[in-house]
Image (tube, rainbow, N blue to C red; front, top):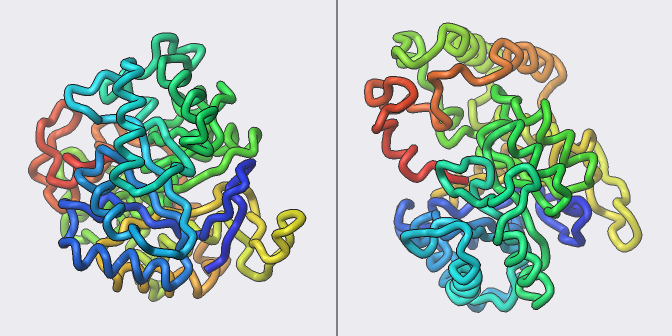
Length: 362
C-alpha cells in the first residue's frame, strides 16, 4: 500500500482509506467489522473515517481500535448529534467533539470535518453563507487551539457550493463524495481545481457511488425506470459494454480508475525531506480514495485490484469518452442511484429512494 502526504497537512495517509459507514449497526455485525478493520491494518491501510451520522460507527470503530498499537489516522465529523441537532449551537458542537473523543478512545482527532456543509436543508451551518461563516468556524478554531483536533475539513457532495466553501481558505482537507468516479466527474469542474490551488488534502469518497457502481444492473438499466434519463441509460450501457470488452469487473475498473487518477503507479518519488518513498500524485486530483467495506474479503479484493496498477490507456480513453456523455446530473436523478429498487423512486420529492438513501451520507 502506497502512502502520500495529505496536501498541506503533515498526515501521511495510505492511498486507500477505510470509510466506516458499515462499521456500525448498518453493517454485517461486530465480528465481521472487526475482521475488516484488522485486515485493512494488516494490508497497510492507516486512515479511517467515520461520523456521528453513521449510526453507531464511532462507538463500534472505537471498540475495535482500542488497544491496537498500529499508528492510525482518524477523521470524524460534526453534524447530526445530538438530536434535535442545532448546527449553530456552539455548545452542542463542542459536546459532539468531546463525545467523539470518548467513543473513539482518542485524545486527539486528526481531521474534524464539517458534515454536509453544502446542503442547508440537511444542516444549516452558515449564518453568513457568502463569507462561509457560522459558529462552527469558531468552534473548530477553539478545538485546534486546545489541541483536540489537528486539522479541519469539509465533507460534502455538491460542486459550486463546495467550491465556494473551499475558496474561503478556512479548511485544510476536503472530502468530496458522489461527484468523482469512473462515470461521475462533476468535481473536476470546480471542487478539485479550487482545492488543488490551495494545496488542500483531497479525499475522494463514494467512488463506487454507494453501490451504483458496485455491481452491474443491466436488466434495470435496459428497462429504463422513469427517473433514469435517456442519456444516463445510454452511458451505463456503453460502460457495461466497455466492461465486457476489457474483461474487468466493475469494482476493479472503478477502483483502478480512482487510484490511477491520483498517483503515478509506475514509480515512487520524493514528496519532500523525510519522505523519500512516498508516491507523488500524477495530477493532484486527490490524495487518497475511501472504500466502504463490510467484510475483510472486500478489503482484500479492493487492495488486490489497485495493486494491479493503472488502467490500460485505451480503457482510460474510452472511459473518459463515456463519462463525457453525461457531464452533469440530470434533474430527476438522486444522489444515490436507486438501481436496486428502481420502482421506489419517482424523481425529486420522492419520499422513498431505497434503504441505501436513508443512510446516504459520506
